[in-house]
Structure formats: structure tokens, C-alpha cells
Image (cartoon, rainbow, N blue to C red; front, side):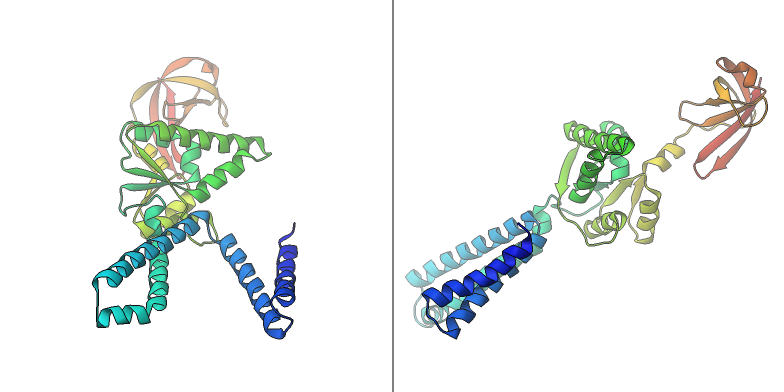
Length: 315
């Protein structure tokens, strides 16, 4: 049933019931209309609020009621004079005050109940690119990444959307990301927490940066946009791609290495091979050695924005 039908029915039904059963006058009609408006307002409010927020708010109200009951018991049985008289006179207002206090206190402290109990750099927020890439698991298994891995609900929603996509490549990426989440949860030395805290922002990159900034956490990513945005907002971004680049073995011109020539290059007689870390090596006069492992000598190294390219010749 469309939501607008429910709202119109509510606005019609409540005045009709109150007008019919409470009294056929304008006061009854307006009271029913007010009740219907309250119900619709509650529906809109609950629709916009996450379930965890509603549960936390209800818990705060119950705690406020418990506190009021305990103090009321003490006032009725042990207090006297002015204190007892004040409590009796303003009993209703004190009850409302405790309920509102409990509700506001719970909502303000809701972050502590959403999986982020503390702030600090021990919190590592993983984004979609890091989960799809999968190397975050290897870093956690060797204790290179320590602390708590935080997985925001909007990141998990994006992975689920990708996994359900009709595009085969995007579907495979989404399923890989979900598999990586499962593997992270299986690592005994790493604590994985999910948080429903979702900052308001037009893009997921800005949501991640805002979330990290609010809890003083670090972001684990491979996304260039998130990396730059985090730098602008003074948030630490741990880029796995940068780590991989930094850990590539140092190779100097003149050094020799054994290389398997896989395919021909763009230029005539060139061959292409790859190091274990994925660095491309262009071999002069290497076309005739395709499919063979040969000894090559490094001529020069060219650094690009995407990595290194090595030029070599047959030794």
C-alpha cells in the first residue's frame, strides 16, 4: 500500500472515530485530527531514523523512568518536609524531565553503542576498494594492521548492491568484498566491528572521511579520491597501493636479473616481462625470446603515476 494512502486514511479515520464516539462537536473532530497528525509525524520520524537509534532512545527513556522510580521511592519513604512537598507538587514535571534526560543522554551517547566505543587511531575504517582488493586480510594476518577494523553500514550496503548487480564484473567485485569481510571476521587477533553511524554527505568518500574525522580514526583504502580528500580534511589514509609501491625492491641501472618474456611490446623487436611485484619490464630485442626465461641487464627506470617501468636489454 502506498504510504500516501496510509497517511490520508489516518487523517480521515481518527477524526471520524473521535467525532462519532467522543462527541459530535468540533473539539472531538480537532482532537482526532491532532491524533492523526501525531501518528503521521511519528511514522515520518521513525522512517528517517535507523532502528538502532530508536532502540537506543527507548533504552534511554527506560533508564530515565528507572531513575525517577528509585528517587521517588526514596522521597516517599525517607524524605519529609519541604523536599517531600516539592516532590509531590512537581511530580509530573520531574517525571517528564527524567524521561527527556534519559532520551537525550542515550541519543548523544549512541555512538558508543553503535560499535565505536572509543576514539583513536586504533580504529581502522575499511572502504569498498580495500575490501574488494583483499590485501587488507594479508596485512591483518601478519599484524601489520593492528587495532579494530570498522565496517560502516553504508560500505556493506554498497558491497551488497554490487553483489546483486547484473554486471558480471561488478557482481564478482561485490562478492569478493563480502568474502573478504568474512575472512576478516575469522582472524582471531583482529576485532571487526560494524557501525550504523552514517554521516550526511553527498558521496561515500565524504561520508568515510567525516566518519573517520568524528572518531579520530584512520581510513584503509586504495581509492585516490578518498586519499586526497582525507589529506585535505587532516585525516590519516592508509593507502595499500602506496604501501605496495614503497615495498617494491630497489633496482638500479646496470643490475642483472632473470626474467620470463611473456609477450611482444609496442615497438619493433621489444619483449615484455613482469617482476613478481607486477612491475613491467620492457626488453630490447626481446621479441625473439618470447616464452623463454633470459638474463637481462637494467638500462633505465621510468617512474609513472601508476608505478614503475623498467627498460632492459638482453645480457
